Structures are given as structure tokens and as C-alpha cells.
Image 1 (cartoon, rainbow, N blue to C red):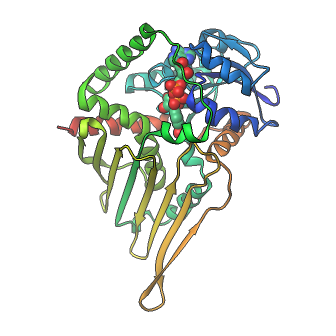
Image 2: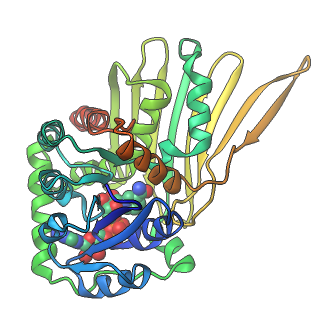
Image 3: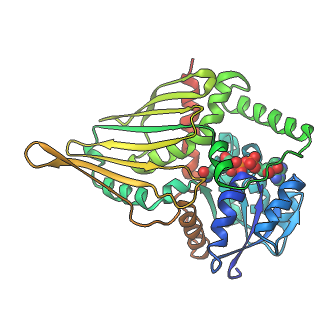
Length: 358
Ligand SMILES: NC(=O)c1ccc[n+]([C@@H]2O[C@H](COP(=O)([O-])OP(=O)(O)OC[C@H]3O[C@@H](n4cnc5c(N)ncnc54)[C@H](O)[C@@H]3O)[C@@H](O)[C@H]2O)c1
């Protein structure tokens, strides 16, 4: 392994330009971007401005085969994640794979099998779980899971583009031929049909929302309070853009709600109620860097009052911590907490949720 570790990026769109390339630039002792790949020449041209020494590839197969790449960041559209990660693993490259790591349990199992035989490190990009305030909340709750009486996971956001376009300079892939885009849509529809029995309509939209936004929420929920015993109920409304669910934890229920509206805002939190404390983690938009997740604890104060303590232990951007943890996992050969096997559990819950939706 060379130092700094050499990163190849497959998919140089919004998240790569606004988040990953700046995060990697801020960690020069740990990482160096040596290769970029995108099917859009316009996007590649924009991305190279943030990594002027990188080699450029139009085909990910060439990037993963490059001797100048140690790890591959998979940041192209969801439906292509599995094939890129499989190719990277086959080429002996470590992988940081954006969420959702794949779109079906079949793909998940193929990835997990390939990870075992390749011996490389594969980490799924759930940066919210690396946020220092979240890590603190996990520690707080580790001893108190038995005390929980109620939990809630809430994620209601508006159009990301409105926030991104007013704070960043992003080049989007407007030059990708319609045939390529259509191929991506067809593959996603077929994959969802095979995975959960819906390839179009509101439930298909809901599955995409679960894979995209909700994978953050559900994965954080699992680390904070564990894997639920079952999904009690799940609904989709408004063409699949609003989802609610109840998760059964035996001695308590966790309520889940998510929606995409037209207000340029970001309201994501997890809240855990015990008889003596309400513990809550709030996230702001990931597209404005260094906005820390916040931990708030409400408890009794005096005879008839309450006290609210809101804190965040550091200002480290969650993506920077994600990359630091990835570096440690690769160099120290540790299994990431956001492993493929861990993320597979989200897909199990999504399958059950879709099955319960009318
Ligand atoms: N962790 C997070 O909070 C977070 C935030 C945003 C996006 N994401 C994930 O990152 C991924 C990318 O999201 P985005 O918002 O940047 O999307 P995007 O559409 O802006 O960018 C995707 C890029 O991939 C390129 N592309 C398409 N097919 C390709 C292929 N076969 N090979 C190489 N490049 C290809 C497109 O031209 C485009 O530039 C998605 O999986 C998304 O879920 C994660």
C-alpha cells in the first residue's frame, strides 16, 4: 500500500464534486486522488480541476485495473454500484461504496461473497454513522437499550439541488446520451422488480426513496438501537415520496417517517425516549460542509423543570471522519462498522416494508 493511499473515483457527479473531492483534498497525508472516471466528458472536465494530476477514464474497468489506484470510491448511480465494486474487488482494490451499496439482496450476497474471497476492505458510505455526535449517542445508549420506551426516526427534506446550487459550483452530466440514461432507468426498474416485485409506480418510487435517503436513517437506527424484530406496518403516499413505518423492538416501537417536499430545507433526526432522558441526534444537509450533527439530551432538572443540553464534540465533517476511518480500516485491516453484511440488513427491512405497502 502506498502512502498516501491512491484513490480512483467512479462517478464524478454532485457528491464527488461537492463532498468527496474537497474532503480528500483536506486529508493530503492520507489520500491522493489519482484517477477519475465518468461517462460524461463535461463532468470529467469539471472534476479534474479538483484533482489536476489524476488520470481520466471513460470506462470504470480501466480505472479499477490501473496500477496507480489502491482504493476505488464508487459514486455513480445506484444501479451500477454492485458491478463496479465487484470489478474493483476482482482487481484487488479496496472499496468505499456510496449508499445504497446495491439494489437487491441477490447483489448484496454476490458482493459479500466476493469480499470474502478478495480479502480487500469494503466500506459502505454511511457518513452519518461517523458523525462525532452520533458516535457519542451510540456510546450513551449502549448500556440503556433495555430502558427505551419509544424511538423515532424522521427525515423530511426538500430539493437538494436548491441548496447545492446556491452554495456550490457543480457541473452536471447534461451531455450523457439519452440511450445511456434510458439503459440506467431500465436496469433499475428490472432490478427492483426482481428484488421487491415492483418496477414502476408509487411503490417503485418508494423503494428508490428507501434505497437513497432512508438507507442513511435505517442504518443509523440499527447502530443506535439495534435491528428491529419485525416491521409492524409500512405505508407510502404521494406517489411514493412519503413513507411511514413502525418497527417492533419488543419492549418498544420505533416510528419512522420520511418525505420529500419542495421547501429547501433538511430535517433529519433520530430520537430515543427513556423514562429519564430523551436523546436526540440532528443532522443538517451534507452538501454544506462542516455542519456538525448535534446531540441533544433532555432530562429532569429540579423538582418540576427540565434541562436541555445540546452539544457536538468536534467540528469534523462526517465525511472527513468517514474517510479517516476508512484509511484506518484499510491500513489496519479492520472490518468497517458499515460493512456490506451490516448494510445488507437495510435491504431486508426495505423488502419487508415494500411487502407491507398497499
Ligand atoms: N452519502 C451521501 O450523503 C450521498 C449524497 C449524495 C449522493 N450519494 C450517492 O452517491 C451516488 C452518486 O450520487 P450523485 O448525487 O453524485 O449523482 P450524480 O448523478 O450527480 O452523479 C453520478 C455521476 O455518475 C456518472 N455515471 C453514470 N453512469 C456511470 C458509469 N457507468 N460509469 C461512470 N460514471 C457514471 C454520471 O455521469 C454522473 O456524473 C449515488 O449512489 C448516491 O446515492 C450519497
